[in-house]
Image 1 (spheres, rainbow, N blue to C red):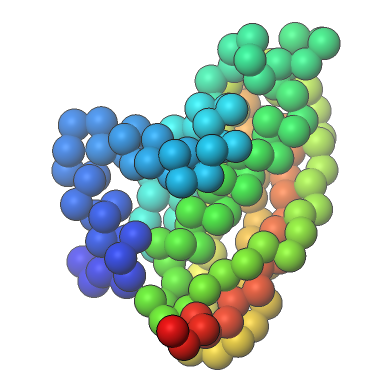
Image 2: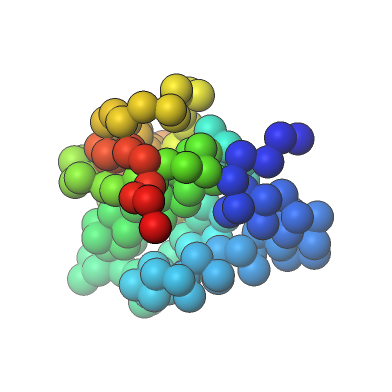
Length: 157
């Protein structure tokens, strides 16, 4: 497998470890501490595809006893940002420009966010829009998000 960048190389090595993706998920939360509030865990992570789950527990529920909308938004950003990090060319960087999220139904179970992106020409400055779907354990889509990412060359040191 071709290693695309440093982060992708780490993921490739860790996937062979027992609980490697769980450990990698925690490392992402250590790097961006706000994500730790929902305890996300990657189930799949490779260039072009990412999937992570959040367990329904009291910490992420709202007054209705369902998974809070902002917890799902946080999960979408976790999946989309990490997907960009493992997919992008090593000389490029990404910056989220916003998020448009739609909550379609109550999330009464654990939730899974999935994001897939086709292989872009990472050599040029561009906007990339990620689509993220959040499903419950029955496979019903409970939320969708679009996250525009600005992709540009890393500044010269």
